[in-house]
Amino acid sequence: MSDEWPQSSGVPSDRLGILAQRRIEAEIIKPIYEILKRDFGIERAQAVIGEAIRGAAVETGRQFAAQEQDGTSVASFVALQVLWEKDDALDVDVLRVDAGHYDYDVKRCAYAEMYHAMGLGEIGHLLSCARDSHFIAGYDPRIHLTRTTTIMQGGARCDFRYRLADRAEGDESRE
Image: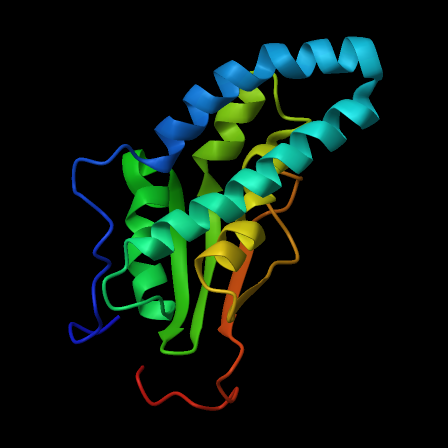
């Protein structure tokens, strides 16, 4: 990302990182999930948790977008990534970043490690991974995420490919 790109106005340096936030949420969700499983079965319990998380992710994306003084963009989204990476949460290889694309691979994921250690590995994908496409839909519906594999669900990496829908694939004018 070049220095001329706008920085996100919504990221105070003392803000709690997403990994720490997810740990707090997981500690609250875990006993609820256990009761849901006991009373309604694993499939229904996961459906309820998934629905709640998806809705929360869209709303969180909207809240982040509302803090962007100059509006949302791929650049403003990239500037937010410090929150997901805070506390050594992710080992990331950035492959491409420009006005229309943000592509990166995650090689190590502390979110997956944390959920497995908490005994929540079976819903870790619901608590974190599944949020990503819903968050970006709330943040900027023009940006779309494609991901084919995650560490949480046994992959060697997570492949994040964000695209701004209204830009031509070959337009790299702001790399």
